[in-house]
Image (cartoon, rainbow, N blue to C red; front, top):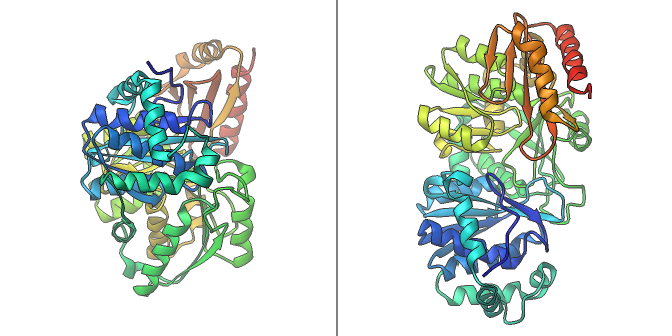
Length: 486
């Protein structure tokens, strides 16, 4: 029997290299994925990390040995796998990526046919059980066959054996390479009317991740169609050593390069992505970072302008701004529990055109209800041109109307006790109690949401008010003091 595998999480696979995640484990996952889904066709891709290619090849070997035909689209962002899975009509897709995790980590994101997500309740746990059940002897023997030698670590595989593995995979007749880039770019550009665009200068920071080649392809197509956008490129070339640090613009310390480039170039706005570019982050013309919450409202507005009866899904951490925009524009706002599996499920149920989270994940009905880091900035760029307003002016108006604290994390000895203290203090005074996700309490002119982390003793607080930044700041301090009163 095989050993226990610890890299399976609630919605994906993530683990430390050479302990939680190895080529052996990747092979097991591939075999178990194809067996559990009875998959005959699977598309695979990998981000820029140096360990992603060997893991993808071992994964492909497992898929093939379980009876699947593998199409490898090469280096790709997660959303390129989402697109390819639906576009090619295959039985499933797997992206090898660690997104914004440290360099000594890697992982995988898995989807079924139609790019339907796989979570613990919908197949991920069953895949784990199958992966663990494979014998050590079988897995070691098969990997030795594909690498023409004994089991080796990721560095050795990448430096000396990747070409051997590719040749062996190709010999099976079940492995091939195919690019979906042209079709993917065409689909991305279908979300906007290109004749709406007026001259724009935009800073794009790929963070040396997988976004660079896609941006080049979009730029080439825009130039061909004479769309007047100039790209100022920062950390553009894909580089798995991440010479400028792991791309994670959610961290304030990682925003300076984008902000400085926006100011230095006089750009209209800036965009930065994480490593697998399923999230994008925006900066206004002054280089100021824009919280994802306010981008949700702008994208909701963009979709409702195209289709006034649009249903919009949003998460329950902060939502007054989104509800106000959607209701005033004639759309239907619908609240969902936080997390991509919940958002996607609710979008399918409601046939919603768009779903957004404050964490910079944005989901689109016409993109198989999946999240994309490319569609949002295209829509924002079009909105800036159509409204003939700066991004800063559009956002600052909404921040003034509904100021928010942003998410504040508190690491505690006893998170449950903190949640109980806050509940006892504020729930009797609340006009609305919302249990969609965590504790949500509304009062006349302010509200907050408090959620426990599923994986660590951390409480996450979000506070917002109606047009009163002083009240929002006062109540944020007040609630935080009670949370941290251990």
